[in-house]
Image 1 (cartoon, rainbow, N blue to C red):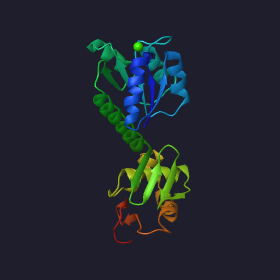
Image 2: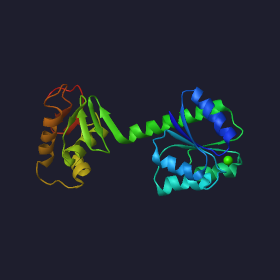
Image 3: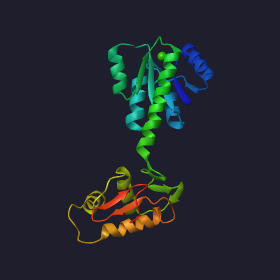
Image 4: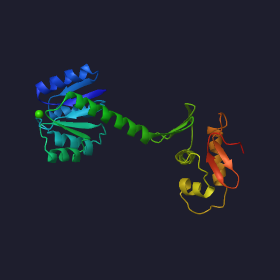
Length: 230
Ligand code: CA
């Protein structure tokens, strides 16, 4: 885990760097708010540990700027001698994810860092990707994969596949598909859904096994692993 420590007191910074490095963390230290800002934006950090009473820019302002002006999503743990409830609330309101008051126990700090790291990884994984069997889609890059191979889809095909992947095992009627993917709530009177299902099937199923996208006669379609072929 790669940690940025923004802390002006050399004693605290030295103790933390040594303690965390013994636990196999990588630690870089910024000794004032201005340098902390530059390093926070310039590097790839798993967690930022932020002191509040800092020269040049204080921790509150630094945290707020990172979040609101720069959109930084890296987890921030504030570590401060200011331990009143009102300080904790202010820290969380400025965009910090956690708050630990000094004096603190190193074990507790480490446990909190690990929890923050787990949480942010989980959220990223959840937000960006959906998978079903050997199908996977990336909701940010709009890429689709089957058995790890990249499949080229049009935006409409992607949205269609995404809808199925959000509803695995559920039979979806043409009307529901129309509403979700074409955003119209009336029957266009065409077989546009069937046409697109066929496009999609050729790309995600034709060259792979098992087949995943099935017709349910008289009902619609379902994304499912082990149904009988139509
Ligand atoms: Ca300080």
